[in-house]
Amino acid sequence: SPPARSCGRVTLSDDVAVGTRGRVEVSGLTWRPFGRREPVLRGVDLTLEPGERVLLVGPSGSGKSTLLRALTGLLGSVEAGELSGAVTLDGTAPGSRPGAVGLVLQEPGAGVVAATVGRDVAFGLENTGVERSAMPARVAAALRAVGLGDLPLDTPTSALSGGQTQRLALAGTLALDPAVVLLDEPTAMLDPGCAAEVREAVAALTADPGPDAARTLVVVEHVLGPWVDLVDRLVVLSSDGEVVADGPVHDVLAERREELLGMGLWVPG
Ligand code: ADP
Ligand code: MG
Image (cartoon, rainbow, N blue to C red; front, side, top):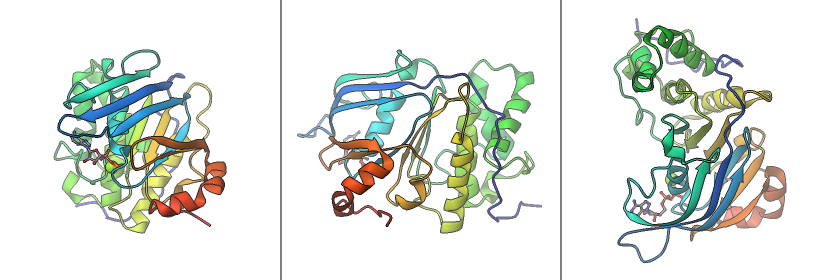
């Protein structure tokens, strides 16, 4: 029988703990797509320490999704445009190690690649050199880490709620043991209950990971309130693709409140 569409509790899991890594350095990143007069990103400088949790915000069209794509290493190679500056992950090109950077997109289901839960999480592992015999344990650990450990592996992906589908996408990313996890408006299309369930999975993923389990996190969201206690740092992009604020989340919220409200963001307090 298909699983309940309820939004279950997520519990902390250290099953997917990994070594310390995930230092991201962006320096002087400017990108102008061909056919556009103005750059989308302008001189972005950003250093993320291993395990740091960052909320990235800005008006619609400010380049948030573009910056996340830059962090995966795809910008410039796959998308046509003029790129200058540099992005490195632990000193090398982020695209050089498959799975090192995981990106979860806004639309639940955008990343679903298989008909069942188990095959979906295993899919990404199939070309990574992970031993076949090691795959079931990796799949199970990733599903447990996002609170989907009780779902039978043969559950149809089409039977999942929006929140479960986003957590499945996160599990597929975690199975690849990423040093950096990027979430592009992961709750924007979910009802409040399912959005809370996704945030809980993210919180469990990053809460007190210890020195050997760092995973750097960047989340893009419009509604800031539910995220402020889950992140360390707030980075703000202006409408023309420049970093205009960057600091401890509560400091930036206090100092830039009017500016953030003016960007159409939902600011707490
Ligand atoms: P955000 O995620 O902050 O809403 P995006 O990064 O999606 O913004 O897009 C920023 C701007 O860059 C938009 O005007 C968008 O149309 C443009 N853009 C993004 N990617 C491309 C591309 N590959 N080619 C042309 N324009 C692009
Ligand atoms: Mg976007």
